Image 1 (spheres, rainbow over the protein chains, first blue to last red):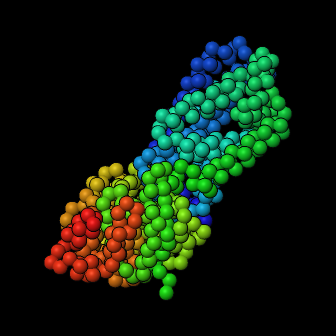
Image 2 (cartoon, rainbow over the protein chains, first blue to last red; image 1 turned 30 degrees about the horizontal axis):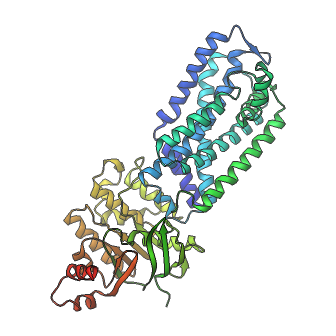
Image 3 (spheres, chains in turn orange, blue; image 1 turned 60 degrees about the vertical axis):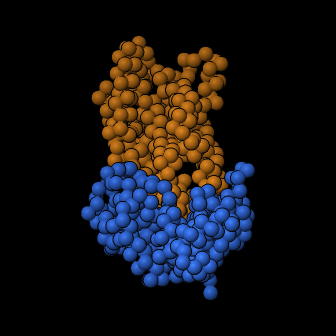
Length: 250
Length: 239
């Protein structure tokens, strides 16, 4: 267990030492989104019975939780692989399950830290109530864990920084931006509503938002079931890759 | 008696390249063993297979009787490896690096031993300096320190003195000799043949994935009277 705790602590320390970049910057980005979209739309749009700025905040929080959880594990692995420092975790007797758990938990921690930062920074702009805090926590943790595990897959697969950037820009970014962060899917045409249901990030955002407003596009139990299934699938895949030493041990 | 390292008929191919072509070798406990050969001979691949960084296509490797695949956790606990490339984690100081490495091996509160290693490797004054700020030679010494944090009974040094100045090299060998005298098995690869000649009790010469000579240093030298290990090396490689 000491090996696991050390790896987890190392991963926490890694992003905390550059917190200005890993925590501060995403909070500022979310704040800019809120200022621009909130200013333009707040007086014109009401969603689920709440003003647009209030509707937008949980979406922005969750978007940053997810993107930063992904960024944490993926950047850690790709940096370690490219610099060669990955040997320091491959030489010791750390089981692959501990390896997986440490990276995913550290990703969740960074995601939650950024999420809380965004929430605190944006609370000045809207009166936000939390209807069901456990749902908020459950979706934030599970969503961060899924993206943390996906970040591990991306970090393992990538051999160069541009491959990781492609994974991030062409998969993670569209999935999060087209997941209902900025809108309710009921405002979309029927076809795109159906397409949205194939995007697991939609269920993470929608379930998370339910925790704030008590209303959502789909029932939170359905969203939770989808998110738990995704977590199980991504975790099994990542554990399988780690067990094989895929792209880690020649 | 269980060998410190046992390697039985190990084969490793990278695509069409045969890096190890059925290598067998046994190294006894307490030996100071030299693994020599030109670049591309397979030394680092063999060490990597022993450390679990590379998976052999066939054959078996074990450290103090523990199979490096089936019983990998115990095998890795018993092995300390100094990698050939200078690698480091730029986020941490020297002391943080060594504490983290200790933790990976299940050791907490390892500062007494860390201090001793730092002292012996002349790194005590750099303990709280970030790894990025160290010279190449100092980074290499930290790599040696990382391999020693868990006091492994078997220590593999893959070209540990490349880029290290003479004074520091002598300090390093003094420390490694002390570890060897205390019972640690040392496996050394180096291109500095005079170091191997002075330190190693037994030497294996590798070429194209095979061991082409294996004997005590004294016997290898006796086969070429009046010559140095470099002469023995050149003649053996050209045979």
